[in-house]
Amino acid sequence: MKQTIIPMKMDAKLVLSMRGDLYLEGVPAPQFTSVVESADTFRMKEENGIFYVRCDSDCKIMVPEAASVTIEKVDGDGNVRNLRNRVIVGKIGGDFNLQDTPTASIESVGGDCALRGVSGTVEIARVGGDLAIEQASQMLVSNVGGDLSAEGVSGKVETKVGGDVELSLINPNIQPVRISAGGDIEILVPEGANASLNFTAGGDISIQTRDNQAEFEGIARDIILGQGGSTVELRAGGDISISDRQPIRFKFDNVFNHFDTNWDKFSNDLERKISEGLKIAYRSSEKAAKQAERAGRIAQENIDRYVNKMEEKGIFNRGGAASFTFEKPTPPGASEKPKVSEDERMMILKMLSEKKITVEEAEKLLKALEGR
Image 1 (cartoon, rainbow, N blue to C red):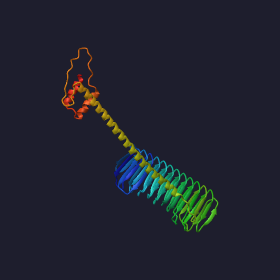
Image 2: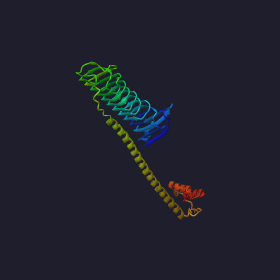
Image 3: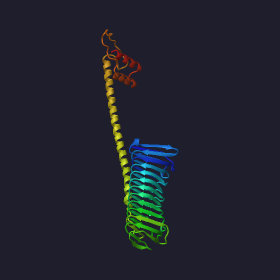
Image 4: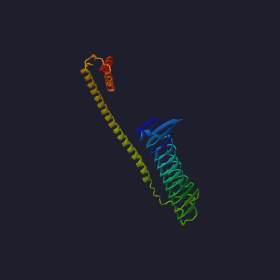
């Protein structure tokens, strides 16, 4: 586990690239905080006033809420919330969730995409799965592979959808709408809505508003809604329904609760892993300390054993000065006695470092052992 905390200006600029899941949140503090599962996977650098963040594992990041953020790519799922500036998103490999951010531009989402509390324009090039939008001004979506559900849209709408479309408009003077769907299109308009409708449907067409009640078979139709106005152009492979009476039963709570659950689960898992990591580190340090204590005890026992040997031979006197005996010279041709071993040398050096003997005594001790 690795946690990084650095001071950061409220209007900082960041570029993020993630190989795992991303959990990004804006906070009202001039500070950057990141928590990653694997410490060696996180990298961060600053160039020309821009912070570049790279991470190869799941990552939770908190940045100043006024920061400008560009997400180059996320191989896993992306979760972003509570930012005050436009978010630019490149490629999201999995699902993407964006909440409480004024506006967003998204290139590609491989899975499902959910946006809530986006007060400005939403621009999306491609969503592979379903797209759910709650509260948005303009919605410009080039391609949705699955279904589209959008509630509380006040501005322009342009999109091409592979599945069904559920759309709730809140402006009585409807802004231009252009929708092409492989399945059904269902639109809820406010009472007294004004628009010029142009339909083509593979199934049936139904209009149930205060000023218009009509049912048609699936053919091209032009209808004036209220006092007319901007063009609403709808192309559906299935049925088309427009009403100001029957509210659409959106399932946003389930969608966003799912993302909130994942967010909380990630935080809880991270806390658990950090706690487990600290316990493992503590156990490792305890084990290392015990091993060091045991090694020190063995070393001391070896020192005492060698000193006792030398005292028995009269080479060394533990009580103070060293005494020496001289053996007869080795007869010619006789094998020499072994030199001082590495263990003996280390023991003498340890005695010296612990001030149990002086430098002079250590030198004499080594010479005596060499000549034993």
